[in-house]
Length: 333
Ligand SMILES: Cc1cc2nc3c(=O)[nH]c(=O)nc-3n(C[C@H](O)[C@H](O)[C@H](O)COP(=O)(O)O)c2cc1C
Image (cartoon, rainbow, N blue to C red; front, side, top):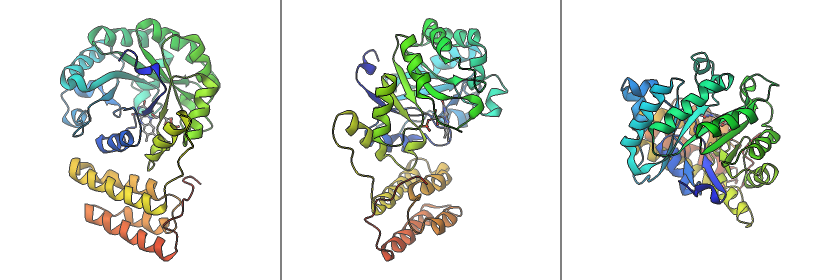
């Protein structure tokens, strides 16, 4: 992977319950350079848990992925990193360690962002994984743990010294969860403090956001999470702006419905056991579309592919009746 960050990169973020093979495929088709798996429990892998292992299934034709592991035991993390590497072979671009998840059930076990409160342990996790795997190891973390206590700069230095080859910074404190704005200054301060590539993350929802994040922080790559939900086009928009081309217009209502249909078909074909996830994706695709409220109520009851296709068709008819299939509504409220 040496050289991967030599030019500006666009990354699909790890998102638990979201970043499955279909979501990754659509992001990469629209211009993401690399997609992350959702976070995978090293402990779960060590118990050979089938549900956990399934998170590592790659899509047909998915040639490269970054796998994110979470856990706080250096030995378990190292052993599972080696296993992931052996299992995925050449398809594994690099490993990432989750040190940013603020969810209660994660941090109370000492995982995710709890590691920011124990930088020595975090460093031991990174060096153990780096020692066990031949692929590079990245770390993703936040501005800090407790609100107001910015520790990311020192933490970043520790992670670099421990062997991380790249660092992703989300500019919120764990205590904020997803509230407030992601602080770009924190990303810029980390970038100035380390010599490894820094990935900026937080609140990128269009091409202009990606470009301004890079310009304001000096970051080497942009990672997008919520801005890609129901919106794979964000990668094409960001790519255009980073390459100095005009930002393509937002998709039309008809294009959104068509993409939602394709997403549902791919889910049914490739991960039918997770088709229920399509409910959330469907809601994201239709946010802001006239008739969306009725459609959302309907999505909640969809079980089979045909249920989703019928709901999309009803929405298309409603939008057509309003004469707005070619409108390009803003995505967020
Ligand atoms: C539904 C959801 C699931 C997430 N799961 C993960 C995860 O598994 N690992 C991780 O490091 N971050 C996870 N995140 C955080 C995102 O990767 C990202 O850091 C955060 O959403 C900020 O980026 P954004 O403003 O582009 O959404 C998750 C976020 C959301 C909304």
